[in-house]
Picture (cartoon, helix red, strand yellow):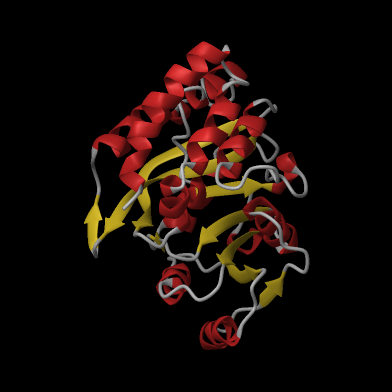
Length: 266
């Protein structure tokens, strides 16, 4: 059984984000206290002051390249078997750790690859619990609430064959089944999507917790919005979908998926 001491939030920090303090405060407000570290490849006095204010350690990636490299560095730096990569501008419900541990512990210690919760959006200071994109993603993820389906390679791949419904900061990774440095390091924006596809081909479960326990902040300066604006994600997603479908089908799916993802761009 995994305990609170077995989990670490790795706060992935980049430059001087104005929301990082709110994110860390939500991690420290969990009903079950857990470990927190800040990982960055852009150390600064600003980030050092944040770490001092919240009394958390900072680790620095000396060889930064893409997001996946930074995530792997932070993941590997965490000394616990469970790791959640907390994005610097998101929010975590106080029961996130409590619900995650309950879900992971309902299976054998070596059965789960990842667990992940549902999420809501934060736009202009307002909480958005439902819109077309969120409803589509919840429908896609629904089979992963079942023990019958969440360990099936076919089901995991078919779900991901229609796009990425998994919110990256809502994911908890299990080191016992994933090993070190599990994140893709070839894609700029879709490294999380490529990583889930890689995981889907492994033995193990994707455990979905259908509760809105993470707030994903949508704003013009976020990495997701910027990359969507540059059309980076669409090209990368097509490459990934082409590993799951014949190219003509992959192009069709990608066109529809890209339209739905535009709601993340401001």
